[in-house]
Amino acid sequence: MRLLVVICVCFLSISCSNKYKEVANTDQDYPIIPKPLVMEMAKGRFLVDKNTKVSGDASLEKEGQFLADMLGAATGLDISFSEGSQGNIQLQLDSRIANEEGYQLEVAYNKITISGKNSKGVFYGIQTLRQLLPASIESANGSLKELTIPVVSIKDEPRYVYRGMHLDVARHFFPVDFIKKYIDLIALHKMNTFHWHLTEDQGWRIEIKKYPKLTEIGSKRYGTIVGHHPGTSNDEKEYGGYYTQEDVKEIVAYATEKHVTVIPEIELPGHSSAAIAAYPYLSCFPEEPTEVTNDMMSKKGKEVQAAGTPKIVQETWGVFNDVYCAGKEETFAFLQDVLDEVIPLFPSKYVHIGGDECPKKNWERCPSCQARIKAEGLHDEHELQSYFIQRMEKYLNSKGKQIIGWDEILEGGLAPNATVMSWRGTKGGIEAAKQHHDVIMTPGHSCYFDHYQSEDKANEPLAIGGKTTVADVYAYEPTPEELSAEEQKFILGAQGNVWTEYMATTDYVEYMILPRMSALSEVVWSDKDAKNWDDFNARLNIFVNRLEAMGLNYAKHSVQKETE
Image (cartoon, rainbow, N blue to C red):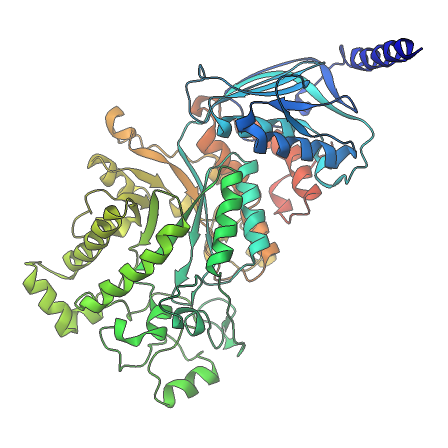
């Protein structure tokens, strides 16, 4: 009798599988972003049911459990990962795959195999598999009674090694849960880097235990301007927030599980008003009050300065003259101490040191800075900035780290091992690549997601200015034609930048990055010759259903959304 039951169960299982063996699929069943390198569609669908099991190499347990949890959450089935090869969804390592982030995905009607050279490739294969599932899995909560996956064969690998998204948490602060959601989006799009902009004129957002005033004072501003800079008034509300070192460890660990590298940015020598408000001795002129570019300083800020406290955290946006003093040894001691606490928190080989928009007016009249110029045999304040950057690079190199800086670090002479992030167009990136320095392209016209997304600015959320549409992002080519074949090798990839002067809420950030982030992900992953706007747009129209199911806000006017 028991044998008969087993035979019946096996027969029913085979019958259910065979039911999907010859099902026809269409292009709309494969809305994968970014587009795979090679994809062959076929008839048939794999059924996720009570017999579904995920198994693989023990080293892939985290990736396997991620996939099992995703399928289980959508269907309500008890699906888990087990070591071995008994599952009908098999994860495996394959040393024959050349690219470190490459993968192969084979979906048959009765079996799925995901292979990668390492766990990162396998994870990207899982993300592709996720996009072959209906968008409703993202919010199904166990409600899907029938879940199938179209048969396909995919061989895929990224075009660039650096595929990044930046987030400024200094102008506006965002909670840990949202940072994790941001990392999830990076992973969904097979991007691999989160550039975390942690310090600014308007707020210092990371706990440094040796310098508690950085968060006690530097993380708080007394008010924020209302409207577009220079503003119409001040909201008179104290604004603050920072991440403890335990928060940072939690976020970095979360990102590591999603194969996302977190690069911290500690701005220097400019954009340092918040640090100087906490420790005024870091300024060339600690006794002088903070300069404010308009009359929109909060009443409390004015009262504090009138009472004799010379420095406050900036309440408005812009570029300010109060920068780190380059002539004082105390400045470098402070920054080295800060980095000594930052470095152990971030396993990334990079630390971003900013280097942009550093006015030289204070340095020009500062006796200490002028003495430094003379003592070091420098020609001018531009070379003084280069001295500053190179000195910090040497220190970070001694700690096993390399620096990334905005393209201003080219001025006065580029630090020997620096990677340049080219934001003022492509000129800086071209110049750096010609000098055989690594380059990350992030020009404003294509990669700044704080720009408006259409000409209809009256019906758009407030933005810093400019216009960058989804089509503008998709049309971008990170590797300049001006470079030789040898020089082109120094273009590591590209990054989307999200500056948050006007993004006070998480749904605001979501709206500004989506779906422009989707377009950029294809720019940095997919084969250049395979790019096709109409094809991408058709996939995007389906892909945004997933964003909706995930509860994300996005610029709906950017796509003509279709139902699945």
